[in-house]
Length: 96
Image (cartoon, rainbow, N blue to C red; front, side, top):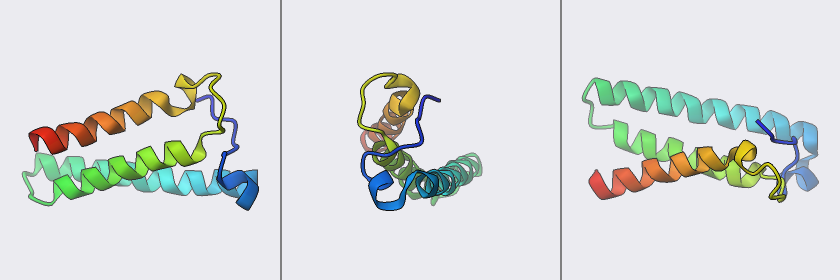
């Protein structure tokens, strides 16, 4: 990943070290949400949609908040992940 460890919004408020720690915690939460949502999907449970929507929204929000504000290496800084999150959300709302 090409993330520099700096955020256009959070680094000035928290500093780079705290921003990286927060990023780690938030990405773990998003990942756990996707895994739990996937298990719910496979188990044909009705609660999987809100879990996946929340995880995709959280993941997209993390990418936007943690972007350093520069366009160089934008793909490595999370553009693909953001597009995947948006695709998941669109698919769930259109086909869900």
